[in-house]
Length: 427
Image 1: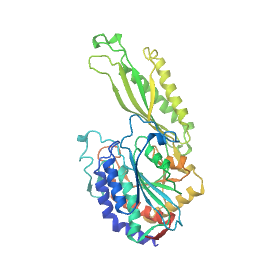
Image 2: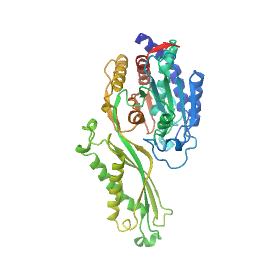
Image 3: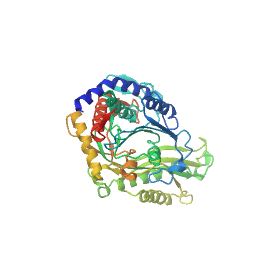
Image 4: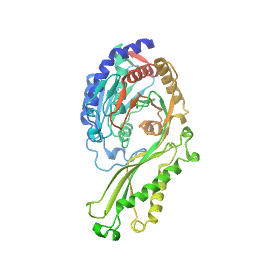
């Protein structure tokens, strides 16, 4: 099939792709509320002839698997959707097209120029929470296949379209797909990293620190122990650890020139019960990055050692040791660059050819300071995972938006990649 014909086919279905994306962004799919968005995706897949698999994730099914992240609370309404296109000839290489439906919270609504889930197009941009991260990627995956269908063609290998939950906090949605038995020769995940291939990604550990204080009336504060104020001592200690972990000699080779690839974030704090009482408790949540190849147990040991050493230098905490609780991300770093397998090289070459035809220059590579679901495929399923998606701005921030011409190019590149990697057969 001539590449120009495929590019034009993407153009022919692009208005439908924008309609799909506009509707998808309007579903507020924050964690625990993904069901309406998954209903929409499932309906679209069913209407388009996919073999549909929709299931509720059971923690008991995945809790012993490599890559599982601990959770606090239940998993009610954690639903994955997979649409399978089964090839008749299976003459090509199979493919997973993965994307996550969950989005991060909006923050204060008055900080947005528009309502975050009132998706709209303004010029070359679509605005809305999740437009970039990563519902545009889900749309490009689906409509790359729709463009081939428009030509009366389909992949000559099995393709699995995955819409998963939990990417933003554990990754357990992608893990559940592995547990369900979905395997392929490669995976493509169109996360919004500006049409570059993610060569490496950091891992992430989430944890909470629980502190106890000694309550008393504020008039006698000197006789109490303020749990919130004690937390600041631990903040400082953790940021010292952050600096040590970013030291030149500790960096993964793909981050050799990145002076601060690992970021620690004190993301949430709660404590105390009354303005006129010295706080008797405090809990704060932390996110810490780790390099590919770092053992998570070693990092946990460093975190705990840092906290307990700092506590020993505090008169009250020395007698009331902080408690460290791990919740959410326990994600190893993953480096596609380190995968020297024939499958990884072939997948990269196919994506580079597709990108070059669309963009007119070779595919750029970038080591990122975030994590994606690619690690599950690359580390635990022996499957090269290509992370390559559109340009977006303000992801996780206010006024999130995605560049629609970039979405078009990614859809074109994906369609060409599918044609190259999977081969084509008549629909």
